[in-house]
Image (tube, rainbow, N blue to C red; front, side, top):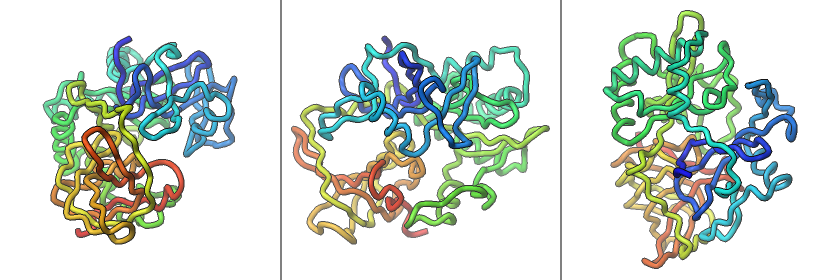
Length: 351
């Protein structure tokens, strides 16, 4: 089977749909995030959860619902992650029954003769953005409801992937230009309206700070179509030549405790991907061991992707970890799922 990467989809025998999560995987398996399950094995009371496609109903997982579902009902869909010494949601290669690839799905949608509000907007947005950025359409894909055929022509958003750091930078510049033209394209976070109906749960990251950070990422927008406003986003995914699997069975990662710190970002080249990696220096520990200087911030929190750029001073709260491998001992600050999730913070400290 050809290798898979972040945002590729895996379907197993029970019809459960997983998303390949990031790029660091043990041999013969993929660490995943479980996204949907068919109504034959799972139901949710969350009004946001139902999805219908191909004559079947699926339910989307939110928060830690997918993790609990797998651990309680389908523990065979976990993989042992030796550096952490515990099992994570994941799929072994022999358990894979089918895969869905974002780039192939976009190709099919563009080749389709079907016409509706969403597909018309998809063709318009991807063609305009591709031309403006000078990036081939082959460098884009779709995920979410468009990938799985769950989309609703009148309610769904446009969820795109963009492949490679170079394509991402061209895309961001193109969207910046389009947003500034008073055209049919607007930055989704240009107004507080973007937060309407959103329940705010982060404790040390305000809605105002969130708007400021999201606005400058330039990967979230709104297309003003003839019939309705349609939100779109572009999720960055690494090109194959950019991928380096950091999984090493000889590595041991140990959580040491909570830390608060300020630091300067010295390399943001991995900040757009999953996990987001920020190399840091000039670190000042505000809470935690004073004799330890973390070399990077590692974030699995979607809100903290593209959060800071090289040269910026950041404030961070998260878990201090000891990383020991054959080359020696280093320390990192990790933001991830688990206890104190909404206390975790990464934001520009001086702006």
